[in-house]
Amino acid sequence: MAVRVGVLGATGAVGQRLIQLLDPHPDFEIAALTASDSSAGKTYRQAAKWRVEGPIPEDVAETTVTATDPDEVPDDVDLLFSSLPSSVGAEVEPAFCEAGYVMSSNSSNARMDDDVPLVIPEVNADHIDLLEVQRDERGWDGAMVKNPNCSTITFVPTLAALAEYGLESVHVATLQAVSGAGYDGVSSMEIIDNAIPYIGSEEDKLETESRKLLGEFDGAELSHNGVEVAASCNRIPTIDGHLENVWVETEEELSPEDAADAMASYPSLELRSSPDQLIHVFEEPDRPQPRLDRSLGDGMAVAAGGLRESSFGLQYNCLAHNTIRGAAGASVLNGELLLENGYL
Ligand SMILES: NC(=O)c1ccc[n+]([C@@H]2O[C@H](COP(=O)([O-])OP(=O)(O)OC[C@H]3O[C@@H](n4cnc5c(N)ncnc54)[C@H](OP(=O)(O)O)[C@@H]3O)[C@@H](O)[C@H]2O)c1
Image (cartoon, rainbow, N blue to C red; front, side):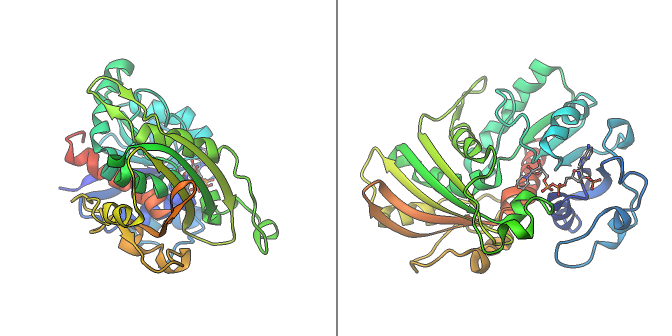
């Protein structure tokens, strides 16, 4: 029987992607949609300005959106996907977990809390059991797992593939699509014919979340990886797909050929939304590119290319679809991991 799920922040850019992925999902059935008070009481069709490809799924379109309040969500909903603004998430997500709901959240609040698993299943699936510690410490019947920021998800799988060589330092420069800021995030007058070399708080997220993801969980505590990470973030006028330039210094010697092999052979998982191949490595020096390569693996794969030696160690480019692999798809994958690990 399918697990009944709800989407918090269902009318937003990530919420719409969540609905697109959850509607045909064989293990999940959409049973609750929430948004702000101004959307509550409307049908989803009236409340959401639908902007993803294809029509709104018919049964979702006629569902009534409720306020984002634990009392408004039916008790028989077992899993919530949250795509709320982080200020709202910080306020309401703990109340849902206290009320017994298990949550896979995309919002940035609480990602770095010691007892909150921050998970990319192919990289650190074992961190999910930090939920036992969380439940002990917070006394929740529910639980909260987070996925990282969209630009963190893009480069961390490639680092995980290289970890056996001993990661010493990483420099990453991002070229991020406008959808990452939400529909109203960047005005067309600002971004057309332009690039903006600043995205508030983004650099800190790449630097801290990557070390948490690559850390070790011993069953009681999580220690963060000691690799040094320095990030520089830029917004550019692409719609979807974050492209990143990465420089990695390793303890052991690492040739571009060995790095390409390590990335191409890095294992995916057998969760429903896992891509067959997690990291596609291009030989062409001008790939990956956002428009051409963001939909690899139905938007759940990471692409890498341009692997070469540089005076700062190995250099390469990587790319992922920011609202699928970097947001909605990442939350769905964590939902599948919760299901597989008996948390639902
Ligand atoms: N876009 C991306 O690529 C991306 C990637 C990774 C992470 N994220 C994170 O995902 C979250 C959502 O981003 P987004 O781009 O989808 O934002 P968005 O398009 O602005 O959508 C926000 C959603 O939250 C609801 N909401 C706003 N204020 C609320 C309140 N006070 N109470 C209850 N619900 C409220 C909105 O409902 P109404 O329609 O009723 O206003 C809407 O459903 C953010 O935390 C963001 O940082 C986004």
